[in-house]
Structures are given as C-alpha cells and as structure tokens.
Image (cartoon, rainbow, N blue to C red):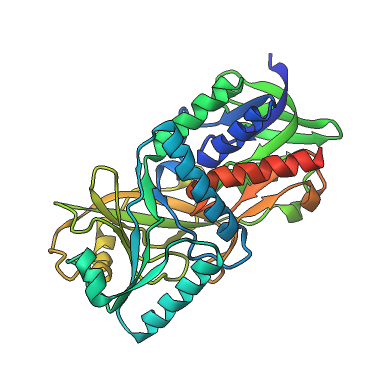
Length: 376
C-alpha cells in the first residue's frame, strides 16, 4: 500500500542547484524534502563538469546567466571561505592568436565589464608569457576572479545545512508524476518504498531531466515544457605535470567555450570540453564513455596556445552533458519558469541550467525563493 504524507516544499533533483534551492527554502523556515532518483547527491551534471568558478564574462548583458553568474560567484566565494571549503582563486587567461581573435577578445572584455566582472585586464604577448612561459598568444585577457572548487565538498556542505535546518534528502526516490490542484501538488514518488507526497510548493531542478519532469506534471500546459537538446562534452587529462598555474581558455566557439585547460585542486591539468550533440531516447540512455579518437582533434586545438604539448600526452578522462534549450544554431539563457509564466501557484521549473549553473547556484536559489515568496 502506498503511504501518503504532507510536506510544504519539494525540490526535485539533488545537484548543486537543487540543493542550494532547498537550503534557501529551509533557512527561510520552510519545510523541505529533496527528491533524488539516484542513490547519492550530485551524480548528474554537478559531478561531470570542470569545477570552475566562472567570472561572468561570456553571457549577454541583461541575461539571467550574466546576472546570476556574477552574483552567484561572489556569494560562492563568501560561502566557501566561511565554511572552510577547498577552492582556489587561480585566475584565467583568455587568449587570442590573430587579429580576428583579438577583436573578439575586446568584445569579451567589454561584455564582461558591462556584466560587472571585476579586474579584467588586457595583457600583451610578453606580459602573458611572463605569467605563463609555456603559453603562445598575441594577447590575452586576464580574469583574476575565476577560480576552482571541490564541487562535491560544496554539495555535501549544502546537504548538511538543509538537514540542520530540518529538511530531508530522499535518495532513490524518482518523481513519477505530479498532479496540480488548487491546493498544491500530489506527487507520486517511486523507488523501493513508493509513496504519495502532497506539497504546496514544487521546484523542478532535475537538470537533464527537467523537461521530462515538467511533462509529467498534470495541469501544466504543454507550451510551458521546452524541448530538450543535449550537448555532450568530452574531457581529456594530461599525463605529467601541468605547464600552467592559471586556467587557459581560447576564444569561445559555437555552443561552448572551446577546448580549454583547467586545473583541479591537486594541480592536475585537463582539457575540454568539446561539443558533441547527442540525441538519446531518454537521459537514462546517455553514454558517458569518452571515445579516445576524439582526442585527435584536441591536439591541434591545444597547440594553438600550448605548442609544446607532447604527442600521446592526452588520456580520456570523463564526459558531461549540458541541457541546452536551443540546438546547435541557437544560444539559450537560463529559464526560471514560475507561476507568472505558466499560472500554476507554487510551481517553479528550472530549464537549461548548464554552465555557469554551479557558479550561479546560490544566486539561482535566492531567485527561486524570492519568486515563491512574492507569489505566496
């Protein structure tokens, strides 16, 4: 027999953003349960990224990505410092190697400054090489506010705060469907102990599965459920010592930021992601294996800014998938779809929360909490 329980707020998805939303709601005194279909927190998008704290340079002015990345980055550094969590404000260089790329670098700097990104400075080739002797470029844009963090440590801290505030994480608990009514939502939850939850507030932060979760919300009009597009990004790790102390990024490319060099907190270098559009039947069918042959294309891209990359130095590492709301030819913003958009009181759907979602997570959480408070 399926049990039934009452709860004020349910958040679907225990990635960085879902946990941040649940923390914000719990700290505001609301009763919160997080439903996570996997057996642990942070096993989806949040476990398969570069763990970069983004400055906020790339995103169009006035977009949610621009505003929430800059706000979220500031909040994230404060949070990590306050909680003593591992991170490093290592900075990054975006590099140009011809006149066309230098013009794009100027546009990026103008956009970043308009977005409120602090400390952006142009470097000549000699100045950049003084910082990073292995680098080749004609000029570079320095972003000192870019950094790296331990994403899982951050999520564990969020989980602890949720639980300290009286919230709960229900692992192995997929949301099968939701039924909207005037009093909230009847949530049918699967797993080893299926149950029904009656909630006044429902936040869909299911990442790659967010459109599918929305489609299973009875009462939500189909026009408020976007089509999902998936961009797989493959990463390769470097055998041997990292040649750089900062992150190195080329000029952005379509649907991504180019094959860039990032560092983990142990100093290991990795390169990626590339962009591989995939069309799985469902998110459960996604193949995260990295095809070693894709590394062939990495060498030329990396040698444009690190000519000394040795042959055979790259090894397949891991892959992630970004939820895109537009296909290969379209750029897309974060979408926070609340009652003002779809008319269902208490429902917030988060769509297209890809990079810089980890950086922006605390600001996204405050945005969701504010919209729910305004609608109450």
